[in-house]
Length: 95
Image 1 (cartoon, helix red, strand yellow):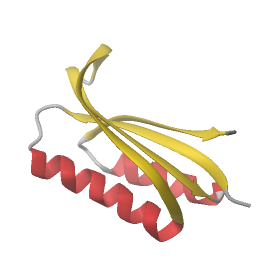
Image 2 (cartoon, rainbow, N blue to C red):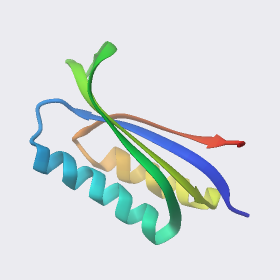
Image 3 (cartoon, rainbow, N blue to C red):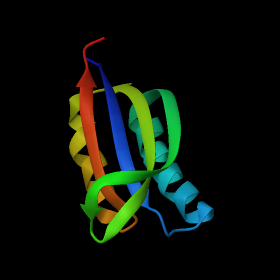
């Protein structure tokens, strides 16, 4: 059964636009192969509520997708493997 999810990840604020696009493309490529992306939002650069790995600002990006729960561990592994991602979370939407 497919569920609706939203995943948000925060990227370092000192990387280039090209590097940001590469991070987003990598995540989207994995999701396109294993799920169905319904929407995405680039929220831009925002001040963090607290310092994360010495960063006070980060680029926020949200992707809404529909897929099976078994793709989540690999998605999170992709996040952890990428040094430009500071934080991430994926939550199930019951809508």
